Image (cartoon, rainbow, N blue to C red; front, side):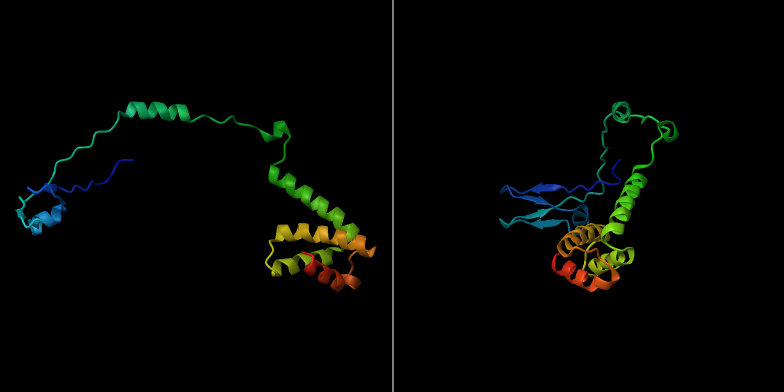
Length: 162
């Protein structure tokens, strides 16, 4: 990318050695600088500066770009018989939760528990994992699975053990 504009500030040096930098607009309008030593510097009017930028040759840039970009090999998922990673992970999670929920906690109780933790500020994914681990602990401790009849007790246990 090339710059759209360049700002130039002329620098004036007083006889005492102090440096003064002013904008072109100030030089055009005021045209004077009062130095700290007491000298009054009268500035010559500057209409414009002719500045030409010098860039590196374009050939070197294009060669370096050619080296940095590599063509990605095209893969055909049908030939490899691979499912997209997201779908595979989601299927595994659903299978694990479905298997676990039938053993430890009913589906409606699971949803209520997840909603309960989400209302307390948990993320939905984290709350699913937490509900499953707490349901396992609760089932071992009470020797029964979470059901509608004992959901309030489980919710208390979940609240105090999250």
